[in-house]
Image (tube, rainbow, N blue to C red; front, side):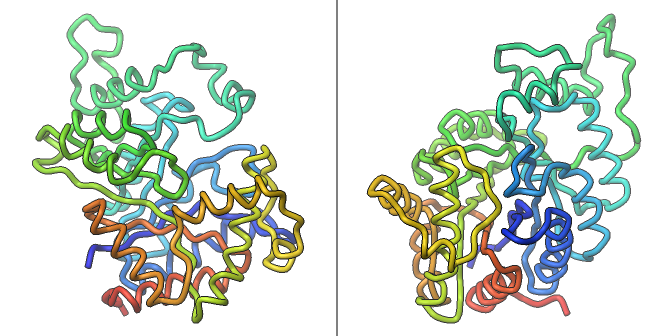
Length: 337
């Protein structure tokens, strides 16, 4: 079977704190390391009461220090929010401290609302235009020392200069990002857990557009998807009601902490809400191990993904841990201890 990895947004549950959510992330990463997952990525979101992961480079360092075998990375750094030199130096520092274990996933979206995005960028010279490609090119030129003589940045060095920039992965949820990752010749991670664009088509476009590069000779595609696994189908369905209500609220612009299954079950849903839930469930795998594996195998066969990255957003941290344990057992991952 394909290798499994973890995408963690550090979800904040109702009645708990963002501080606890961050500690839960380190706890889950230790478990993933023991279970045989190969990669653990943390997201970047801002000003959202439901998500505590706002500083991925900090969490990458903490998680790498708490684990031994996992590759740890950002999934991803939202490049519009950051000066490329700052990104380069942060991740070269991480690579220096944890050589061969760091990934740098890059995204085009700001990961937040317009006002917060403006606050993040306002000292950088905000432009109304999409400057992702300019920032990405600057990041790459810093690493290769590719700025020509006479350019203002020609003498700038990203420090530590003797540590390489970790492998770059391009994140996306559209045809644009799939094609761009292919043209750049870098690995691609598709956000099936929230994308409306078809995952099968995205993977095809990426592979069709792929050009060999110094980074990779062949394409490498990660599929990120939402999984809720429990001992029984009924228990998984109960846990997944938290995801259902969270999706309904997000569609309304309400970014509240994760509700308990009891609260989610008692919630009064409109017909539009029910339709939204049904749509989102098509992007999820929910059930006992056998049920989930059958759904995921079908998805993997259709997309031909090289790696499956699993995000699980349950109200209860113990249930989230158990979901990953059951998945590791079902996919026969090799435990490290």
